[in-house]
Image: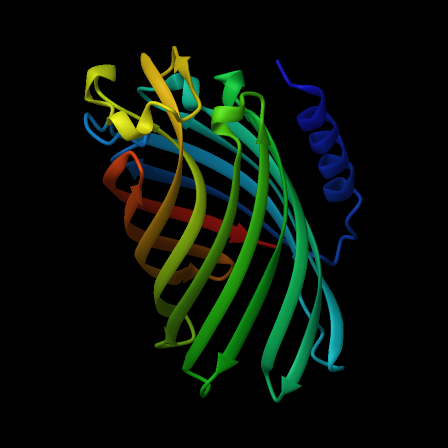
Amino acid sequence: MLNKPSLYCFVIGLILVIAMPSYSAWEIGGKAGYDSNVNRAIDGAVGDTSLGAYLQYSRGASGETRFDWTLAASLEENAFLKNKDLSNAGMLIAPGIIYFPYLSWSINISPFVQGKVVSDNEQSALSFGAKIDLKQPINKYIYIGEYYVYTDSRAQEDVYSSTDHTLGISLGVNWTNTFFTELGYEYSHGDSFRTFESSSTVPVSGRGNRYGYSSTFATEVYKDQVNRHSVGFTMGMELFPSIFSSLSYIYSTMAGDLGNSDNHAGLVGISYRF
């Protein structure tokens, strides 16, 4: 059952997506992913596979002026094969302003609102934030990008709510007109829920943290302030005109008062742009 904030967010997002003009850039796609630690466990990590589909709209800059506006809107749904309570649907709306200070170098500032409804309703959340995105093409083949993201996520249960600050940098290469690769690093500081295989393994220093019992993970869930480092690799290819495929891998480590954990995540997708 949808909570009211998420329901309002979905309705507004759906109206905006349907109302987009026919000349807009659209993308529809499917994806399959694997996450080695869906329960964010210090010990006893649980992995799971997910299948998803999405519809996305994007309005880029015309390139005719130094200032322009952008817009991204998307609807998506993800189903987890083992932990079905983690299955979710979400929407995102992100209007923005873009500025070109030098040639094709760009600075894009975009506030966003994101709604997420999870089968485990305690994790359903409404998020607000903003992203600053910088890109510097070195030549027609190589580009560098940096970004900062602030996110304030309000979940049904406080243990799943979070405030995060994220910094990232990427290096991309367009090898041909139809094939590219990108390497990225990301650092974030903020809140995260975390679990233990047994409550007896919770460090004494962590017993003062806010927590609650989760039937989804069949254990107590603790809220912790963490530092996360992630390294990722993505490759994409145009298979046919307007049909694209992508493959990505991310390794991340998370450190907080409750201990350290790591995570491997992979994603493969195919999309059609029109």
